[in-house]
Length: 199
Image (cartoon, rainbow, N blue to C red; front, side):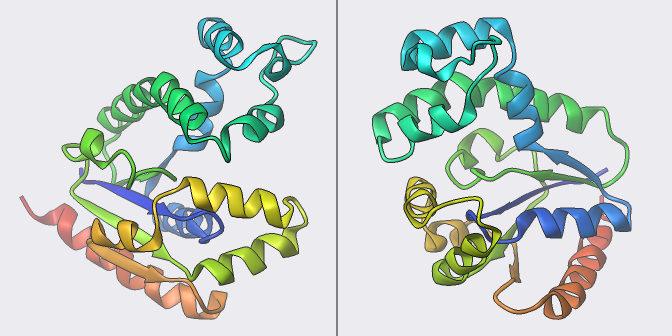
């Protein structure tokens, strides 16, 4: 079994690539799903409330992700505090999930570039879904889920495009259409299968 790290900037289409790989037979580990589970734990919620204030907890006792996002994006110190609290727990869950799987594993991790030191022994190779920042912004605005300021804040809080490309063993260029994406994912899958077969 070989495990591969998959990453890309906000709006890169990384999740689309993960879905296409899953359809080909990969086991996909979604770091965002793991993060949602981690921040639902009472002990973590308590620490988040202590650090960021009662506004990040809903009346039902759940995490208000939107309120937390408003605090941490645009405040590097707050974002670092959040990552220091949650990332070690997320990494443990990703490692445990990899160890339980016998097929090719793709770990979909938005901040893989930022935490590459912690993950370097987990993966046989790193795949980066690459897109120009302006293309990502245009696509995200079309979803109407985020404002221009929210998008810029999230992109600004991540490593740059160049920093992600430096860690890539395989790059998917997602600046085009879905029709352009499919053959690249086909080539990626063949490459992953080949690496998986190597001892």
